[in-house]
Image 1 (cartoon, rainbow, N blue to C red):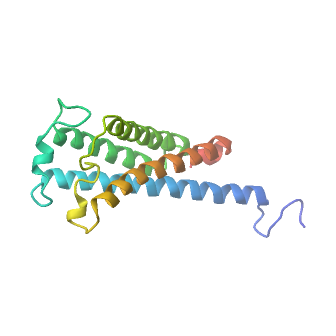
Image 2 (cartoon, rainbow, N blue to C red; image 1 turned 180 degrees about the horizontal axis):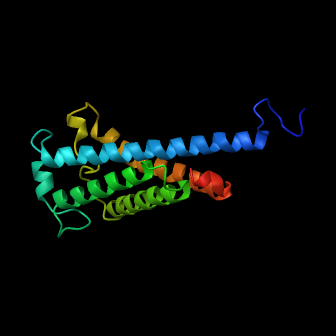
Length: 175
């Protein structure tokens, strides 16, 4: 072995594992970000073309948690924030930890909203995916479960990435 190096590329094993871990963490954040952007744009499309998926009435009514705000305004605001968070987190110039915090913040806000719906025993359709089951043949129960699972998965994955980012070297966090 040459002067403490473990492989022919001159990297020791811990350094190589750190790079692989950073790559996996960064990839996870980028996939979650792309999912947020996609869902945000789907919300925009549903708001712009409500007749296509037959949700005109849903958009006119007040929201279950915030009855003084029509669903259309609340979903537009959620879509804007979702796209902005996704776009911010795709920028590699921002640290991995900061991107994780943004995703965690948005996921926590959505989870709190979902908990509010559970607390008031709301049984209506979830506005998260806005009737995407009418475009793609997905049952409403599966659609609602997917909407909740995406947020919970992003919450858990981002938490793991944050733990990794806190333990990583500062040089890795800047990439």
